[in-house]
Image (cartoon, rainbow, N blue to C red; front, side):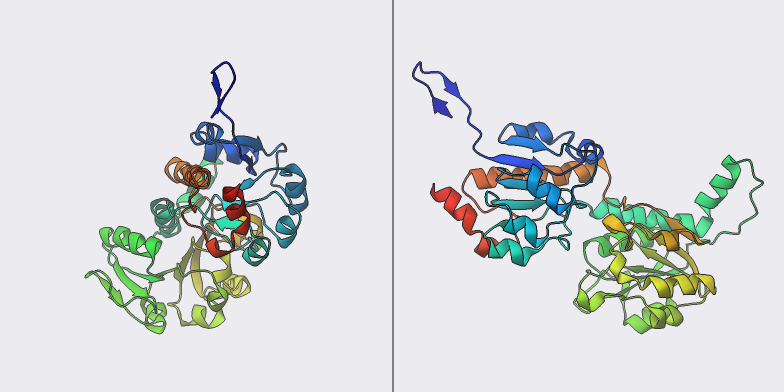
Length: 343
């Protein structure tokens, strides 16, 4: 607040925030949080109807102190090297794999991510993909809508079958409860976990692959888990098993998965992520029979979208109050923010 000579007060917004979301994504994520952000900062919106390249972002966000970025907006080294006013880069998502954190730190720019509010939404979509692949829901619906006599596609009952979850984190543990409620047997493989719920069996990867009727790779995407499911793992699975991926495209060797679909080793594939732009399923896999694919919709529910947008508002509020924002990944390197506070 500033008090003028005539004793009136005006609100001075000392931070300019650039939102990278294109109009469609802005409506999906910020319909509730945008007024809250505008109440505490000057907000500059993405002026075009597409996701910005790094060069475009540098130009459009010039003079802004904070960038709040959609998951499809990369943050390459050149962004941090070429944005002298930038104090913080806030990812409105949890995944920061396309953010050059080292370059941000080298330039003194803070990087933070959103809260994990997507757990229920993503686990529920994994369940939906499982139900679709088990009962041929999408394929039969499309036939019927187009007036084609739908073939009598035999489905698979899930009750009594075995699910294998690789990675017993937030999504994996939530999904396990959903699968147990269906009457499925649940196996879990996670080298960092020593205890699981009483109804879940902790096993090694070899046993999980051999026993599971459906496999959910939910490990964290990092160099050690790249191509976690490759030719050897697919060969070790039950003939005709189902694979469901709602985590990261890098977990699958897509060439090996395609071959497994073609030769019948893999019975069905459900996927919400892949190696196409914005982590969407790769068209080469989507076109194959037995595949049900959604274009990276795991967290796209109002509950998750609103929560992730609200988390960026919370982070801007914290910075304006002189506090390190929650979920910061390089707090020790945020020298520009420290200088901003000192001014």
